[in-house]
Image (cartoon, rainbow, N blue to C red; front, side, top):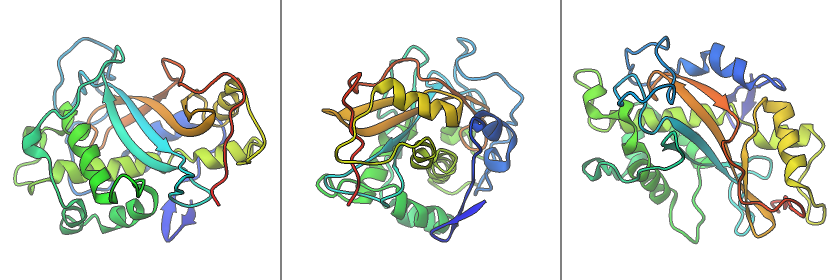
Length: 268
């Protein structure tokens, strides 16, 4: 483990993301609640079963999405930032805004009140909104309301008896941060000799090959024109979002970056 801005960030060896996510304590998140599900059940998208507290459906194709913002710049110069954790359906379709009654506001206060201040500290460094689009709080509220409320394993009926209001949202934010910490995209690219540059261009296949060499799976890359600005890492889940095992898989489809001429611009 190496220190990252006062927090512990797991070091994932090249080509070993799958092993790390399936065997390390990262999947046994020390959070405010437990699902009671265990991790011996069926993997999401392995059947057409309906969603339960211990089987994520229909949104069993899970995306950990990251931003690389340069105009305006957000986050550290040597790290991508969090966009969200999205539950796509197994066929690639998706639902959004599944339970407006749980559109919580004041995410910072919610996290602090339920003992997740370290998660909040990390979010304030690595889960940042484009300032032209609003505050960090607005992004967090949007990500929970739009995507978090659609997880079957995060329904309030799945929570331990006596759980405080919003406990499932706290668990969501804790897990998003935990998963992000296993996906050091910047480190993996630079390990492969690919560094931010205002002049160097890359092919889509070269970028994904570099990431596959480090992670063992192929992500999807998205661009603003020819500028690399977002990455999707895909997973299936065994158990609950709260404390289940995320099994990495290669992206089921290519991102929207062009085949060549891609620039990974530096943050100034």
